Amino acid sequence: MFTTMFWILAIWFVINVIWMYVKRDDQQLQKALGWVNVVAVIAGFWAYFGATQVAGIDTWFNILNYVNIVLAGTQLYLGYRNGHSVKHA
Image (cartoon, rainbow, N blue to C red; front, side, top):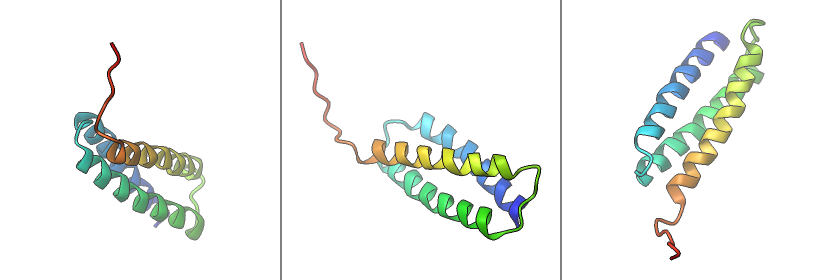
């Protein structure tokens, strides 16, 4: 389960980052990706602390979990930020 969850989260991370970059201005998509990423973070920590760890990837799994927290925060910020920008002359 540990290895399977790692690879699912790793593939999701790559797809998520690409999608986030391509659709930077789509606030609805950023919100959706952010909340899906929150679920991925919860599942990732649940698998990390609940399953028997594999020595080769346990450090990378932990790093992936923390990077996903940063990514989810960024996506939620982009999704919920105020859409009106102030331009100074």
